[in-house]
Length: 195
Figure 1 (cartoon, one colour):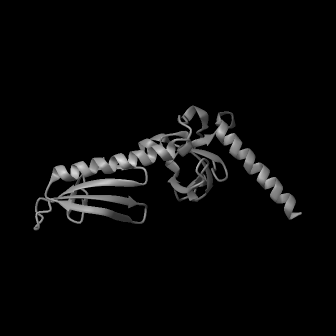
Figure 2 (figure 1 turned 180 degrees about the horizontal axis):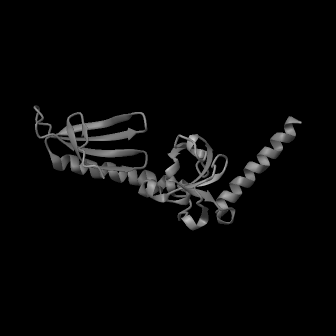
């Protein structure tokens, strides 16, 4: 945990929670010339940028703390709806081939649960198909592992040290087996059309 303080537009971040697609941030600047000592904003960020939206300032901490809780509740409800049909439970090391001298490209890999945000620590967010990156190759110089989430089909990036291992086929959950079977049928019919 870093002791370095985080600032947004001169406001020291005193509380923040990242849930769903955004982080809700509460900041304080007791030296603000206009008397707007507290700030509330939504933050979205990736490896390249941070974007702040829905920002408000006030001289009342209680007013913004109340708004902070309202925004948090809204995000919780969004996550509950989005995660409603997602499989629960997570994948553990004993379900994977964890040998570090493997190439991951094209394989079904598992991301360590602890590197995911708490609401994402489920098998639906852990199980990925590795699509490439230097980190996908054993002994390559880079660490990037590019993946496609097997449940949501969204592309993402992790580091090689975030990968738990290659999921053993006998531990494929039922939903994954069904998706892989559909993929196989689509590939077969695509090949037949090309003939």
